[in-house]
Structure formats: structure tokens, C-alpha cells
Length: 262
Image 1 (cartoon, rainbow, N blue to C red):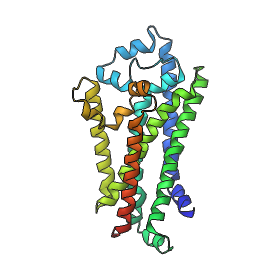
Image 2 (tube, one colour; image 1 turned 90 degrees about the vertical axis):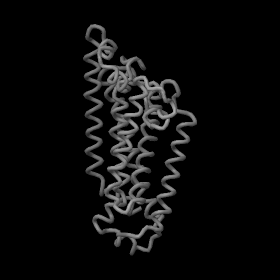
Image 3 (cartoon, one colour; image 1 turned 30 degrees about the horizontal axis):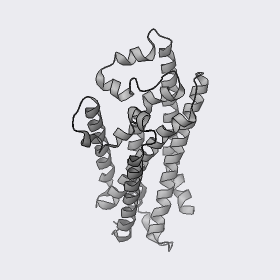
């Protein structure tokens, strides 16, 4: 429990900054959408005037933008991308910073097994991801009330589920990469590169690409507003992504047990 608290304290400033940024983005987006709904033609006309790539990014025509869920759907993909970067950086740093700061000696003289130490770190990291997710949900609710928009919890939950599985996957990927490489500081760079490639693949397919199976290899395909509207909780794809994430956590535990510390 002390190790989990230690991780929380170590990331509290970073987490607070991310929470403030997410809340500010939700409020700005809702006020902007609210101002556009009063303009001639409303939000739909504005979106239709955008280039095809931006229409795809904002999920033009997917939901009713006069509701709280519809307003959030316009920035959902932005949230997914931003928090994917946050998750992969958190995962890649959660142990590598111990080597960088030379604090791992302190951890291992406590007589606690390595896999338990790693489990505590993972629990702390996942809790941070959940906290940011919950704050996002509460922010959308409060912004909807401020703008007098109808809010549907059942409509928001699929978005939050898709957001969390992306966070979980990239957190696990960052952790696994940091324990695989001898120079764990490169793990965050590799994770960010993977995110950018997945995003570009997803955008390419939305703009008319014809190789469907490539799109399904990108997590952003399953976090897209149109996909969530059609599949709600994602079905078998969500389960597969969670299982892959758990597999990466398990592999990380094995590598951590046999890793030669720097």
C-alpha cells in the first residue's frame, strides 16, 4: 500500500495538470458548440464546410450535437489521442524512472518480491487512468448542465469504455517496451511513434482507403464515434484488446523478474 501511495505522490502534479487540461478542453468545446448551434445552419453546416480529414476527425454527422453526448463526440477522438500519449508515457516511465533516479535499490532492500512491486506500480498507474477518465465524464456532465443540454449517462459510458481500453493498452505497451529495451528511455518515443502510425492509418481509411484489415489493427478504429455508435461497447474487439493488454502486463512481470538493473 505504501508503494502505491508513493507512486501517487510521484505523479500527483502531472495528473493534476492533465486533469486541468481535460476539464478546460471540455468546457471550451461545449461553449464553442453552444455558440455554433445558434448560428444559421448550426453545427452540421459548419462541419460540412470543413475539409474531409477534419470532418472525419470530428465525426461529422454521427450524433445529435444539441445533446451533451453529441457535443462531447466532437472532441472524443482528440481525448483518445491525447490520453493515449499520456498513457504510453506513464507506462514507459513508471519503472524506468527508478533506474534513472537510482531509487530501485531502495525498493529491493524492502524484501518484497519483484512481481509484487510491479503489481503495485501497475495498480497505481491504472488508478490514475481511471481517475482521469472519471473526471472527463463528470466534466461532460457539468458542461452539459451549464449549457442546458440533455445528458445521457448510458450514452456516455461507451465513449468512456473506448477511452479507457485505449489508455489501458498503451499503458501496458509503454511498460512492456520499457522493460524490453536496454535503454528504457527510448520506450516513450517508440510508443508515441506507434500512436502516430495508428492514427494516420485510421485517418487514411476514413478518407477512402480500401485495405480494411489494416484499419482494424489501429485502436483508433474502435474509438471512432461512428464505430461506437454502431457497436456500442465494441463487443468481441473490446475483449480482445483487454486480453492483449493483460498479456502485455503478464509479459512485463516476467521480464521484470529477470531484468538486470542498470
